[in-house]
Each structure stands twice: as C-alpha cells, then as structure tokens.
Image (cartoon, rainbow, N blue to C red; front, side, top):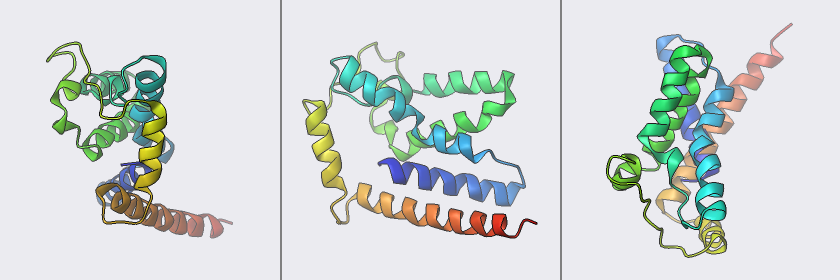
Length: 161
C-alpha cells in the first residue's frame, strides 16, 4: 500500500470509530501515524543503512508498543500509536514475521527483492498504473475515503458562524 491508501484507509477506520463510539479523534495524529512506519523505515532501511528494506524498525510490534507506552503517559499520542498499528495491518506485515516480531526472531532484517532505492521508486511508480493490483485498489479506496472526509468536514466548516 502507498501514501494515499495508508492515509485514506486509516482515516476511514478512525472516522468510523469516532462515529460509532462518539470519541473525539485527533486526525492530525491519524494522518501522521498512518505514514510514520514508512517515514522512519524507508530512509533508514533503504538510504542510510545498506539493507535494501523499507520495512524495518517502524514496522515492528516493538515500535507500536513503544508508541503505546508513550501514549499511556502522554494521552495525546494515543491516536499516533493506533494509526501506526493500522499501518502494519494494511501492509500485511504478518507475512514477514522476522520483521513483525523483531528482535524476538533475530536481529537481522531480511533484504527485499529490489536491489536499490531507484529500483524501489521505479516499482512504486509502476503500481500507479491502473490495474486490479492490491496496491492500486487500495489507493483508489483511500482516495475515495479522503474525498468523502474532506467533503463532510469542509461542509461543517462552511456552516460555522
């Protein structure tokens, strides 16, 4: 899943929870948390460290647990940890148990199939070619949710005195 899919689908889940449970959600944290694992891991695992893997520290349960512990002390960060956890679900990270359960299954992160950052970018750009791929469909769903969210919230702001 890519940028729009992560933001839109996470936003949609939070929006549904807010409407059903009547809790006030900080959507800024939802948006940041939906991208946080990738914002950490892509530069670190593909550029700074020669791992050729964009799913490392931020894609672990340990990372989400650390965010959760921080949010227990500072309640305002609860939605950040929630959105980061949803990111792991959206990435189907359970298919990479050595990453998900790091460091319990070892300290090494597996290398990915692409051999360079530039090949990764090339692969990402190809995912935006219209097709019935998982990534493209996720991006379309995310885009629709973002448009619906913006439409409703912009309408609410226009009605303010």
